[in-house]
Each structure stands twice: as C-alpha cells, then as structure tokens.
Image (tube, rainbow, N blue to C red; front, side, top):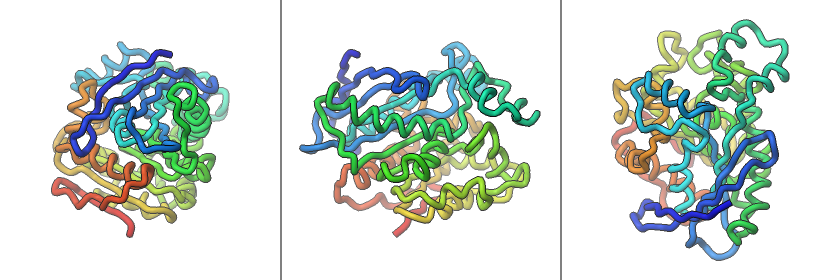
Length: 344
C-alpha cells in the first residue's frame, strides 16, 4: 500500500496535492479493489468523505480496448479505475475519496442469486465474463461497506478522521443507479449527498428488470413501483447527463423526451436538495457511448475540460457546498445546457 502524490487543479485554478493510497478489497467479495484519494491541505478537524465507483466496465483491458475501439473511442480507461480523474477533482475540494471496483464474478453470482431469470434476461447478460453487469442492489451493498472501509482506513493510511456527518456517494451509469438505490436504502441514514453521473437505469433489484423503463420499452415508466425507492432519498442530490445519450435511450419508443427525462427522476426524489444538469452541445451528433463515457479518458485534461469545464465545475461546486460546507452560491445556468434544474 504505497502512497503517491499527484496534483489537481480545483475550480479556482489553484493546485492542490492529492495523496493516493491503494487500499485493496473490503470486505471480499463486495468489491475487488479500492484506492484512496485525499488532499494534503484540508479544513482542520474531521474531513468529509465520498465513495465513488464505475458502472459497467471491462474485466480485461484488451476486451475494453476492443469494445470501445469498435465504437471509435481511443485513450479511454475501461476498467474499474475509469473514475480516477473525477475522484481526484472531488478530493481536491477537501474531501477524502475512496474509489472502489466491483468484482468480476458477476456471471456466477447472478446465475446463483437469480436461478429463474427469463430468456430475455439471460440473453441480455450474454456479456457476463467480459463486462461486469451488476444490478444496482449489489452496488448499494458495496457503497455501504465502503463507507465503513473509508472510515476505518483513513486514520491508518492518512492520519485523518472521517466526519461521519459529511459522507457522500457517487456512481457512474449503473453505479449511478446503485448510488441512488443506496441513498434510499442501506445508506439512507449514513450520507449527506449523492451524485449520479450518466445514470443508466438497466438493472435495479435483478438483472435488467428496468430495461425499457426510461424509454417506454416493455411498457414501464419511472412512475411505477420499480422506482419507488427514489421517493425515500433524503440526501442532497446531483444528477448529470448528456443529451445524446438521453436521445439514444428514448428513441422511437419515447414516453419522455429530453429535457423532460431526468427531471422526472429528480421529481420522484421527494426529499433533500436537488440539482440536475443535462449537457446539450458537447457530443452533438456523436454516438451514445462516447457521450456516456466522457469521464473515462486517460487524459485528465479531457475530463476536466469536457463541456468547457462546466460539468466538472458543477460537480465540484455541489461537493463544496453540500459536503465541505463552503458557503458559496450555486452555479448560474450555463449556456450549453438542454436542462438545468435545482430545488429552492
């Protein structure tokens, strides 16, 4: 477990050094690996913390390179560390960040836990063993364990105590759905903020039980009981999405169209403060996957500069206000948005 130092520019363009520590799995098998990111300069006393994770990702590097390459994507990190640059940005705001990676044994576990899957479900999990495809309920359990992990490991590895009243969780794609589910169930009384990036509602309680729920395929919509968990979220909420991926999900079966789609999720969340941002122009006419994986670039400048830097700035602003406790105004509405929603 070696320590390394990197540098990260925060929204004010000052440079903060980030301590990075590999911290392994805790407990097996809820996630296979983890890494701590923490600023060397932070507020005195206990420090806020956040757990961050990926969504569906490749289990082997060459598989990820091949699949993403077919979509025309290059220089993209496709494994569990694809959230590394977002993790560093959040840490630079004065937050201990634990990045976790889901395990690779989803095929065996899902077939064991759901022996009566339909033919449609089995067909959709055809990439098991290539891409991990954990439903949100497994991510939620991992988030809950990771909160214990970051609280226990931070004093040992960083000499810092976590402020248990200022804990957040953040996930991308299916990990974003897992963050929302965790915020409404096992982590409901443990967190102050939840961030869901490029939310990909495919599987909530079992494999692919939510497919079509957003687009209207299979006759489902987000008002139905599958999404009742959203109603019980009390943590402050941030959702970020891109218009091309919304359009791809809505398609010809639309029951909702951008910019109505993700405000509907925000509306379903009845408690807490809410912010939602849908990018309009950055990936206009670009394929769904490119828009969906903007944060996975190996180049930090691609991530922090995406959408003119607005998306990362919005995430960082939310973190500073909701977790760090800095008294600053929320961002004003950017020009290049399809939708910008917040609660009073």
